[in-house]
Image (tube, rainbow over all chains, first blue to last red; front, side, top):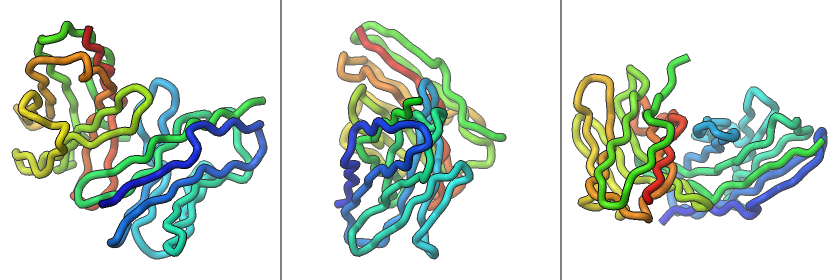
Length: 111
Length: 113
């Protein structure tokens, strides 16, 4: 069975600092991995995805994630965060036609 | 930009009442989903729907739940007799194909009292 673990429930960080949100998955088959972001009072938005090819994937707003098969990880990183990045971040793995989500990590960026 | 829309944004209902949550998926999408998130917990898959039938459902999706695509645009989730534990944020999603990314709506917060 596939599962997703996000190791940190809350990550407080100061503006312009780097951040890493950790995600580990368990799977015995090929994986398709996603990061979704949920801004306050909004729905889930796709941030980035790994389906195949380059193991480093990037979003338009400076986030990146690296698929590491040997460590079964898909950590999300940003070298310099903004106040506007404050949100909840969900890692997910696709199993068949559905998504299996992690518990979510609340990123709180302070001035 | 096309988006998935859900109505209402909030719904309060009494235990035992029926509720219908509504969703308008993106127009050229063929796969539709419902997920829910109980406060403080994970987002959980409920059901997927394709070609006017359920393609997959979770153990959460028992006989109290049903889905329907009554016309060419709406996709609904009905809970026949709500329980307190049905209180959650319900997300609708749609995708072009089974293996493409899903686009989510903003959610309906259901509160059962």
